[in-house]
Amino acid sequence: MSRIRIVFIDVDGTITEGRDTYLLDLELVSVLRELTSQGVYVSIVSSNALPVVIGLSRYLGFNGPVTGESGSLIHYDKWGIVELAGSPTRHVYVDVLERFKDYVEESWQNRFRIYEYALKVRKGFDGWMVYKRIAEYVESTYRDVRVGYSGYAIHLMPKGVDKGVAVKYILDRMGISPDEAAGVGDSVMDAEIMKHVGYKVAVGNADEGLKKVCNIVLDKPSSKGVLDFAWKIIEGAV
Image (cartoon, rainbow, N blue to C red; front, side):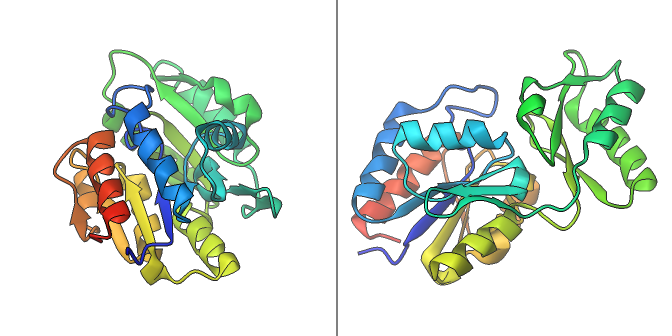
């Protein structure tokens, strides 16, 4: 039987069919639900707005606490909403949206965010190039804000919180050892998760920056890689 008691898992590029789609892999969802039936917690850790993540987890049948806004917020039915961030970044978002309006546009999720705000890169521009320009500006202008890029959006985040901070909070509050926890992701923004789990898992098409900090790199991309890993947990192979 597997030692893993909780799986922290990203959404976009991880339980989706690829890193360029929002389509969930329904076969993987079914297997993750099988994990929950065996008593393993499946915990979404995402940069999406918290209402989106809560809805996903609830309707997909997952059973663990969920994290939104890149670690700023946690929700679990037993705890309610836990706010880990201090100050919102909305003022920075308004500034950046105006200053870089030729390159980025707002995300519809921003009206449902509290601390972290997202910017979508306009079609025709290289996301990493735009991210680097915005990061250089923001991090030289605002001391309390950092910038990340998930491949889906550019994120303006409060300093002092990240996905790893949220994962540590959940583990501590649930009394689960890092050795009994797995983190699965695709983006370099998921690297913070890996500091607090024993099983550090990157999908086959993950950012190189994430692969470098993981002790398991899956052979297959996105959801297909996660599917193989989930079966290994069920079979007691990890």
